[in-house]
Image (tube, rainbow, N blue to C red; front, side, top):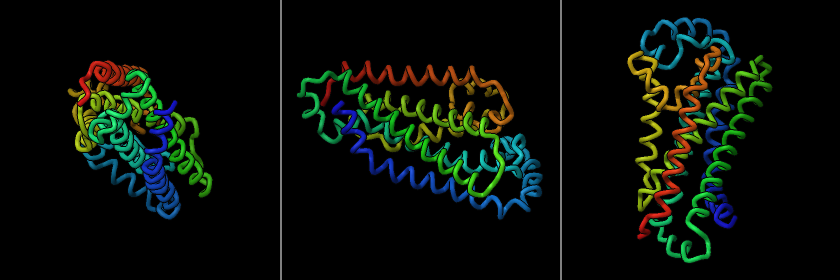
Length: 260
């Protein structure tokens, strides 16, 4: 497990920074809810009547004035975007970083197979992403308890579970792409996460693009759909399949790749 531990150590600082920023923002958002509660009903009616803008962000389905609606809109977007960017950036540098940093010559001369290297890097990615989500959930749940608000804990757990699955899928896809690169793909990682996010918005705006629900993980990680009790098993299974294909492609390609 040498490679696994090394990846955890090298990614430790970034993990702490991202967790502190995202978790802190979630805690702050939850903390300001009581001071905004009095004006929430007017804001909820305003957002619900903003046409395409409301539909794009699910504000026509969520009760923005409620604790859960506010949490899904504000905190969910923070973790949904921040967590996706973190997973994408971390995964994109796992394999490409070895060539870009000229450490592949050292690593691959040791008696360890490329398959094992990839599997341990994937395991480290999963641990980092899960750890970030646990910290963020603790910040959100702790904030709700601290301000004394009521929450549907079942829906909250399902929502955070969907966000975790979404980030793991994006991480797996970026891991597969990293096998094709010879140096870090910062722009590609950010671009992929952003593209999938905007694809999720487009589904809400145009029913003709409904097929994108099997492409973008932001469809099944949408608070409006989860809190409304919609059945999302199909898109989740499709997301899992895409993640497995992405990770599998990375494993296959890196094993046969001519390392520069």
